[in-house]
Length: 551
Image (cartoon, rainbow, N blue to C red):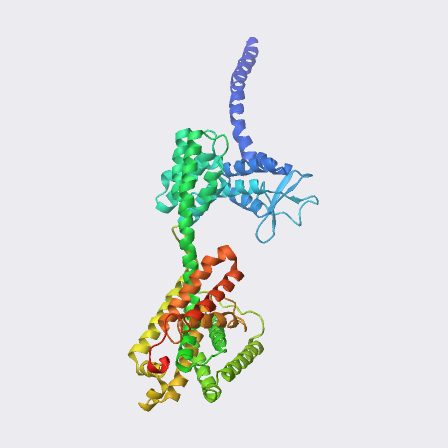
């Protein structure tokens, strides 16, 4: 019986030992989760140390590691670095970032930091190579968002940066992408990466050259022209052929782009000159205040938008539609007052008419300067006139496109008025033979007043359109009066079709001369050519017909 306690103690000791020995491995296996739980979210602690060196190579590596970490703050940190809002403290060995409002946060924890942070806090420096890495990282992080426009922008950013570490993200996005435009951009980005990669095969690089060639823009041309010297011979040969073909294609598109710019400029000149063509053709009046009618139309647009901004902001997209008839009425009414108060007493005296209207233009400019001030006034663009779109390799702005459409509508409407209305018939009669029209019972004085008002009203609605592409200031009309006279004289005085052809011809010729001679010399060359042309054809391209005209 005395040995029983000893045996019982030994048995308990053995049992305790048996239970203790297996517990060590279990504890060893449980240790890693505990360590992981203590680590920062996404494992950014070791990655952030890259930015403490403030070395460009280390920073670039840190960008790639942050992007690959999967942390929810990766985009925030990389965008902060891009905007120079990422900071480091060498003393504390910590990284910080500021939000858009300037609030300081810890990059490791995401918690706000009181005050301005450590005394030695400094911004993480970046250079062009780091910026390319930033764009690639942001592009890779944005490839999976729902918005197709953002995915397209991300693919374009990757194409420009050509960072090889983004290739897996590009290929993963390609497998899921359903939007054709975005898929094409992703394919081009993948081709750009493969073309610059040392690990891609020769066949893959030749296929990448073909893909980039289909893109056809200047960025694709620069990429193929800048291939590394060590690229395979077959790849270099394919790239040279692609560069030659793309250069020829871009030359054609450059011609088309200049023609579009010329058409756009011509439409502006036509819109500014068409009212002058009517008054000059019917009445023979050199109206130097015509540009101020354009200015008045622009200020009417400004006043309409100011009223809408303060009383009915929801109508802003309709502001130009509201301003067009108002500008026509206001400028037309002022034009009738000018004709009745000044011009009617100066018929047959062209020099006095020119001086009187020139002095009137100065008075109108000073009146507007006194009422609205000398500074430019802001006239906004409605949403339907904002933005651009591409056709091939040329970019077209909606604003310019709508101005061309508006100009053609005004031109067609004016032709219809002259052809199908009584006023138009009387205007054509007075233009061709004023004495005969008066003898037939046409009240030429009334026709003159309405014609001057019509021409001024059209100048007013021209101001509505020009407010979208030029500064609204008291000097707005001065920039168009000389060009308007050139268009009218070159096309043929009083002939609307001549005004159309003259405006488009001068606009296109000017845009084709600018790349070679510059803007100033191009205008001088156009002026000299018109002077020489008028020497041969004093009545312009399309001279009016009629016995009074011939006489």
